[in-house]
Length: 418
View 1: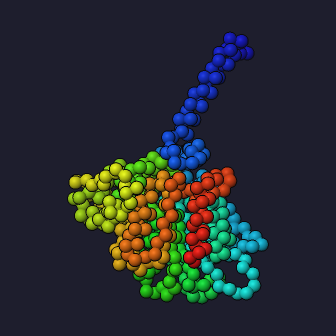
View 2 (view 1 turned 180 degrees about the horizontal axis):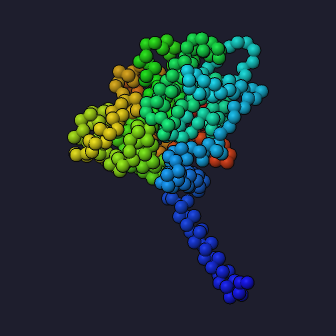
View 3 (view 1 turned 135 degrees about the vertical axis):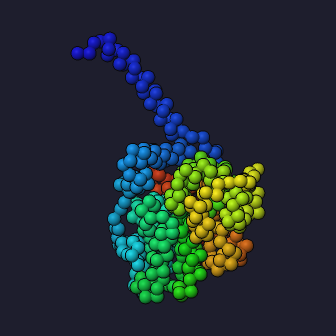
């Protein structure tokens, strides 16, 4: 039996242990955030949850259980996947378009046979996470369908590490091209003159590349009316734009994590990540990448309020081995921001949503500016208190007011323009 003295020692040790655990938890959760961000503690807790899942998946990867992205996807999908549930005012179905899985949301517009609007939606997740079947995207697409009174087709493209660039783009292109066939549009009672392509984050990247590819494909007879990009990632050529420098360690997406997503997408090694953080992959002695980077000169494309006192970072001598090992760095389909002006001139009316506290803020802002210079009608909504991914967090239990405002602003623009 335990002696009274041992019991007393254990009792005295308990507060010390609790204090230590509390301090460790606070250290893990707390990160200083700008005062312009509202609901800071809620964002810290959300970010800590994501980092914990990432750390667990990285640990499992280290011990050889599986690829860290497969584990991370399993963790998120285990709690987040939902079946296609229809209701009295909406029909939801899962099907295949040219071998690609899609989830379709069809509002019940009643009798009359009126043609309906269409939103083709591409989810985010660093080309490696997320799903059209995820609760977050299912809820979002239902809301889009209800509030815009549109058919929403959410594309379930294949993910890293099972496939890499350009297979994700090939999937969304195949599904979209099939959907744009006159007989398929007729099957879903869709007005061929009221079609939008949209996506968030990596989905915004795929949406932008998809629109560029469609406008150059003469076999596609149906034209897209709008593109709507939500905090899109649009270039891999400069990881030191003002927003990358300002928001290096900002929740929910840090610069280092974004670089690793890029390397995974383009099937490159993470050993290049630190070199890319200082733009060694686009140095002055690597003519191929530097020529592309000239098309996104942020010193001329960004407003002074974004540039602040940040300076462009160019390396005189870099790491050409990165380009040799990751040749997709030079593919404009991966970096739609670097497309030729002639390509941009063919694009439809555009909506771009950006957030101040997001490494990708300048990607979207520069794209909006380049499109305007190419003669495209552009609406750019910027949220000073916004953070990456906020549009997904507009409902309980992860409600952020900026997420609801960003979602509603996006819906309002679609309703008025589609």
